[in-house]
Length: 277
Ligand SMILES: Cc1cc2nc3c(=O)[nH]c(=O)nc-3n(C[C@H](O)[C@H](O)[C@H](O)COP(=O)(O)OP(=O)(O)OC[C@H]3O[C@@H](n4cnc5c(N)ncnc54)[C@H](O)[C@@H]3O)c2cc1C
Image (cartoon, rainbow, N blue to C red):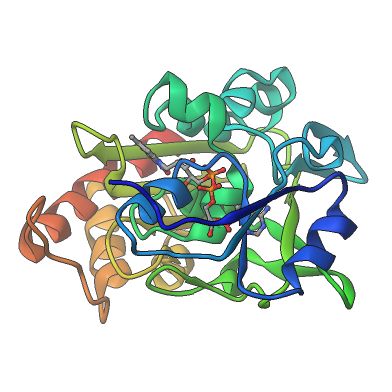
């Protein structure tokens, strides 16, 4: 399929991109690995694309004031191979290496994935479990949105109309914290049919987040509270799974029925929790 004709502007800076975004029916283009397929299917028909892929200020990974700061334009591939990420946020590196194929990892960006908020994307579960902040910039300046407030529904986020994600800020986990991401992948695309990210600090404080299970990724807060400071066992994992899925509208589609997804969520929660206990 061929997309509807559109104008194209290469932005040289974040401010230039924000100004261009404010000027009408336009969309940001980062790696293009979600937007271009949607345009080819004519699910999206922006009049103009603003290409942010050459803005150096949006790229790279650094440590700053007790946080790991990942530029929104950093590719999945760069996160997978970053020494800093491997040392301090290992489940980000492991998850990045499981995304799509080499081409997707070399073009696709963490910021693009979060803005797109595909219910089967990997990054939402990771930023939720890591308690990250999503730094965004618009004409009103910079603000930080907690990951827990960012995903608002099916392909929906708290991002304002003319705002751009500039960075992901992740508090550096305490020494000895264990972290893990487990996913049951769609075999062709490798999107998560179910993905579960877990983090557990030495004092037993536990964070759990799911993707693929419902309209948007979510933290399993009741399960976290039940497990925090308590030993992880088959029994406590079973109760945590009950709490995690209570009241959740579990998706069913041609890849996995709702019942099967619930089963997968329990299995992948157990795998992630066993890995961090
Ligand atoms: C074959 C294939 C397999 C894939 N497999 C997986 C997988 O296993 N797991 C997974 O999680 N994903 C997967 N993806 C999706 C991939 O990770 C995308 O790259 C990612 O979701 C979007 O990032 P992008 O940089 O390509 O964004 P784009 O496609 O350029 O943009 C996506 C959306 O985000 C907006 N946007 C982009 N950057 C910003 C920004 N900084 N601020 C505000 N808005 C922005 C755009 O306007 C657009 O609406 C796959 C994609 C393909 C094509």
